[in-house]
Image 1 (cartoon, helix red, strand yellow):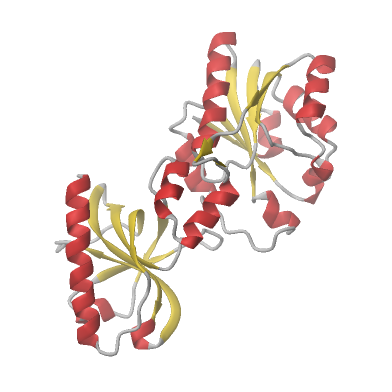
Image 2: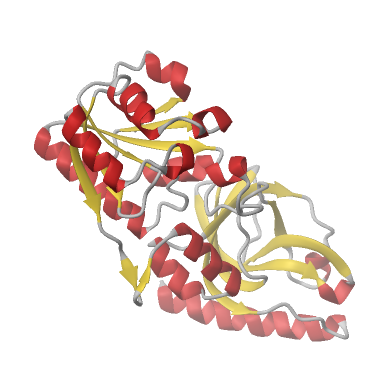
Length: 311
């Protein structure tokens, strides 16, 4: 998969005869994949080059209309997920106030048609872009006829009678409806971060941990204990991860720390990816260290049984 960053690089990219879809694609969830599959099938049939146009930073962050936005995927994570979809080229456009003020007609003609030689456009049923989000399916339908490109609308994808959307998945993860969120994503929600030195509390309890620094703006799901799989040094390690404040130790700072089962080696990697597989319990404040240790032993036993059953 080729990645083109910005309008300047796009200008010299030499893209020709393309089928295009565009959007933020935060999370690259099952609804997004339905759109992408539709595009790649059309491109295969019409012998076009498939192109996905996305934006960085997320438009909501620039426009600030809904307050702080926690994203399901960083740009790097999104590109990694997109690389598994069959898309040939991803164009990452810098989203700023100037781009936001583009009339949708100008965006289609000056960027999609002139710079990408677009012959076919695929969008989701509710997608809108451009100034005042006027670039909707009705406008694009009219432009397809006047400007000579094919236009396809992909209907909504539903799970449990609910449309699959990034905003809804964020709400599911924050509220602890983890299984439904996993079905909507199509994969286990994951966190990627730099491995940092912690306070060493876990080691004194008999449960040494790796601590992760999660990039700003990445959504952290509901606080608590999860079963998880860590990936670093080209190996998978099962374990349990805690997201939240260290209540028993009166430490209000948010931590992300994982105990790796049966791990005795040395960690060479500076970063780790952690896939969260099941939500186990909410954070608790224990009166003594011994009570905390006993609960962690219970958590470990439960999680080991879960992971063995899933293996």
